[in-house]
Length: 198
Image 1: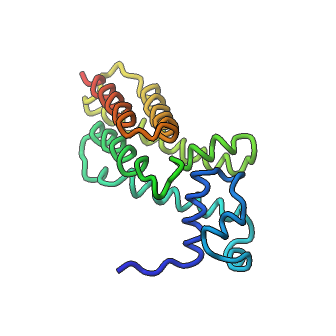
Image 2: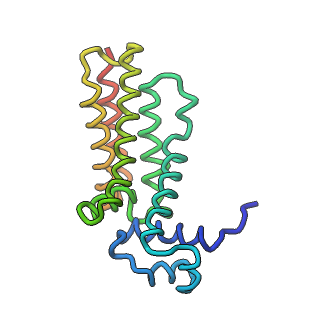
């Protein structure tokens, strides 16, 4: 049986949905209070400011990202298969979850909106992108080392391409809402990955 959700958790979850849909700047504290069904006092009892809510939402979004996207990767031995699993998870368990992220990937939404608006927000968002790209490169390097990927492949370039394609797919899916289009994009990406084998 699931434990009841606290007001603080409700504020974070509703803010996450709102930020995904409207962005941070276009979401008012009134929007948050309305969706979380709380008063100004209730909200400020848990958060000093809207900026505090942003960082709480970011931590929750990172937790959800890890749970969804890294699910099952530790059970897979081969590095290239792990990249494929990551891509499948990102497509099926993360991007297609319109209930949690009604506006699509919250990191993409916020990074586009907040670029040059708030340096500390941008740094916090970029940190996740850097880590994701580094993880993809590490797995590709392991694949190259184990002989799954050709020796002439530039893993830094491929990691950048896969990372960019993931973000691009998120943006396109966020506007088109087409599961078929999203599936085609990831099929092409996985096909490209398979073309790197010796």
